[in-house]
Length: 280
View (tube, rainbow, N blue to C red):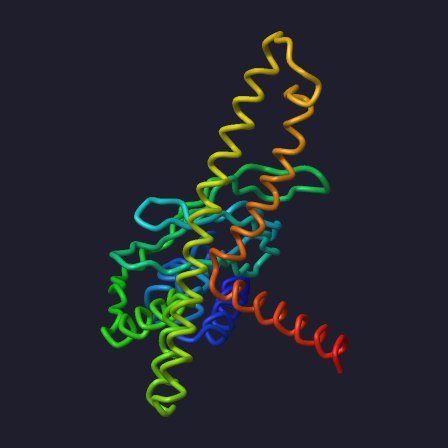
């Protein structure tokens, strides 16, 4: 009667998981049912996030507990604890990020024990403590040239400078505007760019000079020297830091074209508004 009950339970497992499970030769054997490694997605490919499943079969009248260790080519993938009620099965699973290569997936049962009574356990060695091996080869994904090209194009678009955009605008003005109007506009734009670059270079040099002065003042302050009140390092250094702040601020404005032209637009707008209110 007992054997028929066990066979009935295994048959239910078989119907639940389809052809993923193969009956053991000895139904009374506790442990893994042979060939009981399966996957949440099959076939799978590189980059897939799937689950690896196995099944622990307990034919004893006592509760079975332990740990299932999953391996890939003897490399530990993960460990899960399980509890299998008497004359039943316990499903165990871990997550797996699929990578390319040859895989040999299998599971082992460790620290298995039967529950004798509340809080009392008996260690047990299971003959079927290792599942059969599931061998798979996962090919590396091939990225098409079109994808690479699109990625490169996107990268180039993201790294395009504001200067290129301004040049494109200048070209469009030249193409779509009569020469009588286009030439003065382009000449003004070139003059403005020359002015911006010149100021930027001067501010960069000035920043280097101020940093050098601050360093010299720091060295002098460490030495005891007799100087006039206004020439004392402790008096001059704060003014140098204020000067450095404004040089960096204007340097930032003149360095980046988009910032320069936006600030210039608002300055011109403010001046026009002031003149309008002043004279009209």
